[in-house]
Image (tube, rainbow over all chains, first blue to last red; front, top):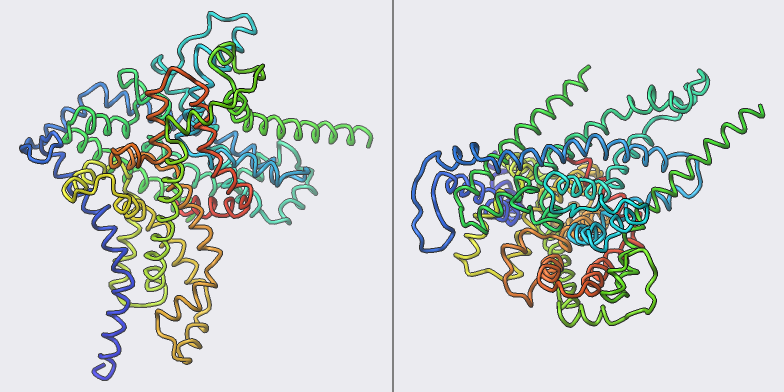
Length: 298
Length: 279
């Protein structure tokens, strides 16, 4: 041990230098801000450098948890989740079945479906606000064409309708991405299983329900984790399409903490929403992981 | 037998129909926006479905002139490239140490990095904005790049250390016998072998960096330094008199990514999958 110690110490020091820049960045920009946000959430501060920071205890949390806006934003996050499971999951799984089938051009289709993810959330959001515009957008024009102009409303300015528009645009953007996850699961099913299914006369829809879906269970788990944790964090697409408005009606928790902090200068309130979001995210991921581990044990 | 063939024919037809339909749904919004970026206001207000009667090319120069479109696209490309370089330079040695050294504290460091995944970026906004005012680093790309890097590190280190762990240790031993130090081993031997995973991570970071919105929203206030997302939002919110240039800007912002996707779509697919399954 004594003999090794000099080499050992040198090696230890070297490894420390290798990880140090990353550790510093993580501590400065991730860990410290979270602690600082927690501290701010217990105070009142208007975000201006010299302004006083006054201790208010749990007031920010109480005000947040009793405010209608906050629960409305949670409801919007829930819509994102519902949209994810009801719309996105079936479409993504369907696309995955298509691109892993024996048809021609699967490579092209796969690349085509994935394309929207590349475009950038803001650009996608803005593009769809053009298409959904009540004056000149495609949907408005289509409704005029089929003789139902009375159905044209300002979709992005009507509460509940606007958040669902955002949710559907989000599904448009991420269908291909989630398709990749499911496709990876389908491809991993061994050929023997397919052969055995064929011998037993199990084909078509029956095969999908009894063979493909159960064997892709892991991928459904991955999807669920990504969907649920992602929904809490939805920001860019909402911001690009509605700015969370009108009157915060389409705000998600992430939007709300931004507007509270940077528009109304209620840094403490914003901090409280941040911490609630963080804790909720942690609890949900731990819970989901627990579910997955239990499934794997069986 | 005949019935079977007809049945499978119908099934195949339906498959192709759905596949093509979904491809149309995917491309349609892009094509419509592209076509309308060549119209003037009156033509757009007549409806987006029709082809322009007169192809109006002035929307693009207008967007470039009024919204500083090219400048913001360049800014974003610059930030994205800088972020991917910094991320790799910082993450690679850390991943190497974590994968190859067995000091106890490295486990703690690894957990620290992985904890980063759990923190939503939004929870850090208030504090990051405060730090940047204290340091006087609003509008600083260096600061922006370092933040982007910090939020990409956990993914990068996860992917890199996983990849390095999968490599044969015999290689390291042989290199060490030949007198290679850690740094040389990493840069000369492991880096070329790790090319696939580096490409994967580079693509993921690049996509993130190019279109990132929220930090540029709170940290960049100087309009000549706007990243593309920020500049687009600013333009569509303030320049509402004419629609064409807005469409043109959105289309222009997508072009760099579409070009990259055309060239590297298989790499992108692999990268996205690696990034997703980590979750």
